[in-house]
Image (cartoon, rainbow, N blue to C red):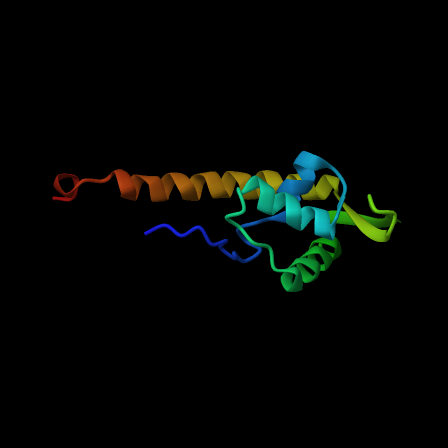
Length: 115
């Protein structure tokens, strides 16, 4: 039975790099809100995991950051995807598409196909 409650997914599912690739530089709060909006509020981004993930991605060279002013003129760190991050995103996208296709085969399989 489907639920209207948001689902909290681990970072492996709600990759901030995809959001940055589509929207360009964003601050952490903006990344979280866009992920939630794009999912139709079915994904909830836990603020306690978002910033450690952004730090990890920055340390890996997938994203870079710089300080700037947010839309309400507060100091915020803005994140952007790097060239290396785009390469990693292409690989992750291909892997995800392959995984989804494999899972799709299981949903399409019929009992007579297995005998």
